[in-house]
Length: 34
Image (cartoon, rainbow, N blue to C red; front, side, top):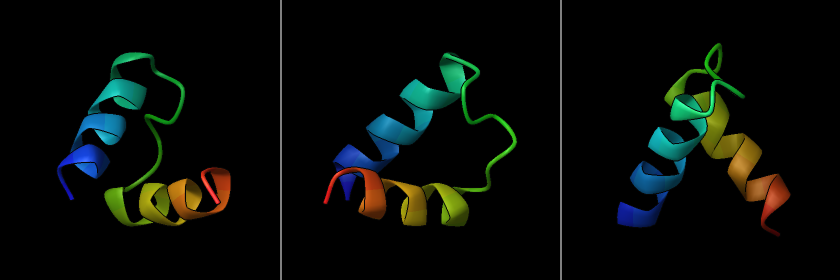
């Protein structure tokens, strides 16, 4: 799950999904990267 941590931090630094919780972001990733 290391890439999940990487993607989450990367998005936070870009301030694109800074209102998302890690759980919400996980669901977002699963739909975006499918």
